[in-house]
Image (tube, rainbow, N blue to C red; front, side):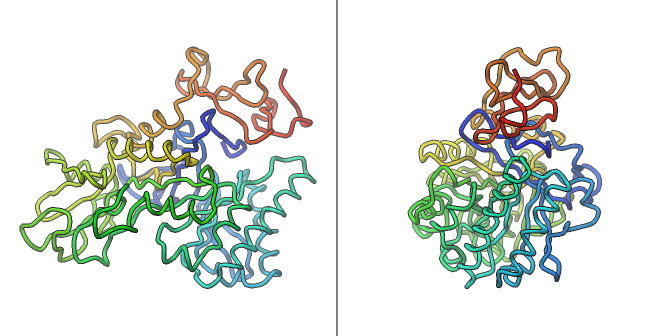
Amino acid sequence: MGKLILTAASSYKLVCYYTSWSNYRTGEGKLTPSDVDPFQCTHLIFAFASINYDNELIPGDQRDIESYKTFNGLKDRFRSMASTKAKRDRFIKSSIQLLRNYGFDGINLDWQFPTNSRRKFTWLCKELLRAFSKEAEETGSPRLLVTSAVSASKGIIDESYEMAKIANYLDFLNVMTYNFHGFWDSVTGHHSPLDQRTADDQLNTAFAMKYWQDQGVPAEKLILGLAAFGRTFTLSTTSSGVGAPISNVGKAGPYTMEAGSLSYYEVCLALEGKQIEWITDQKVPYGVAGDQWIGFDNKESIDAKVKHVKDNNLGGVFVWSLDHDDFNGNFCKEGKYPLVSHLRSILVPGTSADFCKGKNDGNYPIPNDPYSFYQCSNGVSYTQKCQGTLVYNPSCDCCNWPQVGVHP
């Protein structure tokens, strides 16, 4: 998987984050890299990597090295690293070395908080793309991807990004359209609504995606964020609707152990047997269990968000994160990875009938189509497409430049 840049035959991306700390949870909350189903998503991103005091990219945790698939990160020390060309050059050189050493396909920059450094981030994106392109030409390897996770908050967007400029240098942008409401609020509110309520004209997914487009970013480069977790509040009165007063964030779940947040499978546990309410104008659900108010996403709200992606010609959806979905299928009675599987079925449904029946799991060339390949998983066929003009080469099980080798 680390050797392949997987892009579904559909024009839409389904980008999935894997968090390294989920490997260190206990019991049924533990998700190891070997448990990740690589056939669910078109791109896998490993969170997080770090920057050391020499402005070099390093693994976020030495224990992560053996389990990297691809990666994300760089929250810490970003502003210092981007402040001068010399520091950026050192970072870029170390990035290429780390990416190639561990078989990664690209980098995902998490630039949310270093405000007042808009121009420096633009320079970083430009210089990364230039260096990655040069390295690809010199080595004959596919160019490494340059992507970024970006804010959905207008205030942070305006301070942190030269939006139209960075779009020239990034392959795609993951817009974090969640956490619109949280511990800082005094009343309940859904943290990832699709549409607005009267008082929340900017605190919603549709506004954020349109705002990025209005600033000159091509729609096909924008990836809508889906949270596989719910945000929770503790109610302070018997009122339990949207806008009800709260005394605190919600209680921590038994597996993720984070106050104010529950994984999707913990939501299923908390709301088992409870009535699910639907916020009609925002197209998202919530539920109440005692004094706990839980806003989350389900298949119905996913359908609405995917429709928004398709209606507005956006690039796809990303999921934060795989370990928050019911990855074992033990809690929600909807099978393994119910949210991601549902996303895949409606966003990138490309399959190839009976090709994989009786075949071992793996990748297979498609006759007369060097730019694509079949991906077999448990007898199910998926058609995958190499990036750009790359072709599938079965000898290395990778997508590569045509001159390196084209299957017959």
